[in-house]
Image 1 (cartoon, one colour):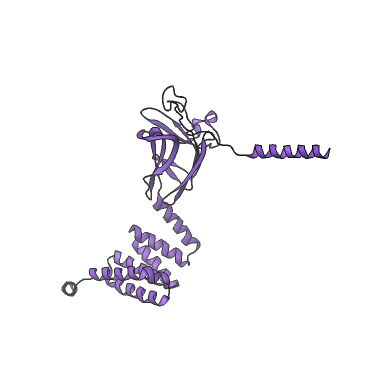
Image 2 (cartoon, rainbow, N blue to C red):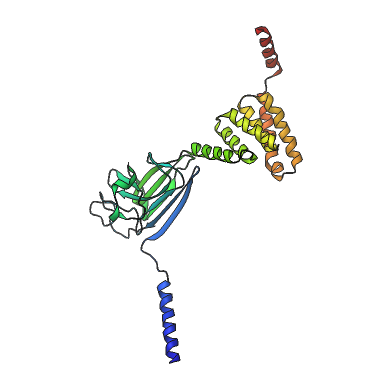
Length: 303
């Protein structure tokens, strides 16, 4: 009896192990995350294979023309963004969406739908958040359906759907500058005495060449809270950008002195050379003695 019970237990254990064992799927699950500017995009989908069958045609078994396609296999393909964005020029709020397409020879319809849990059977056009038309392009042959990003910039990218010898490029847009400034302004409002936040905001404005008087004010505030070689050098760069090179030079030189006394390894290995090179550039922009004398003489005549 004991042997019999042991046999049953062993058989049950084997059966349980067999049921839990993973087996290869006809269409493998895939996913990718791509940062565009300050936005993170996550795509999850399954990759069907052609296996010698017809695809993208009037009578094809896979993704026939003029019929709604889940744009992948198995579960609905989803696209999720951490911020608001544009999809083929159409504004879309941050969130997660189902990706559907309607293939066609001349122009595809590409859709984002807010009900990301349903397949084509439960699809309702009323729930679309974006519906665009995209002209297909030719590409190298792809056996397995693929989604990827290309042509990345701070504000845009292409979301590419590729299968067989067809590629569908969808332009993604992100207003990174507005999003960045909103985030930085929020951080300053929450921590107005935080030196790193003040410097980050001033540095970003400098990099964009925008609102330089505001950038200078933020740099001055950071220096007042805690003077460092980095915020002194930041101020010198802002003054230079404003054309105030005479004011910028002593600030840059002070940054060099403060940095040398800081014992900061990053200063010695990187910033020292950068500041020294910057000082040479500032000196090259200083007016010559003759120009300065001419300016002073002109001012006296006006009086």
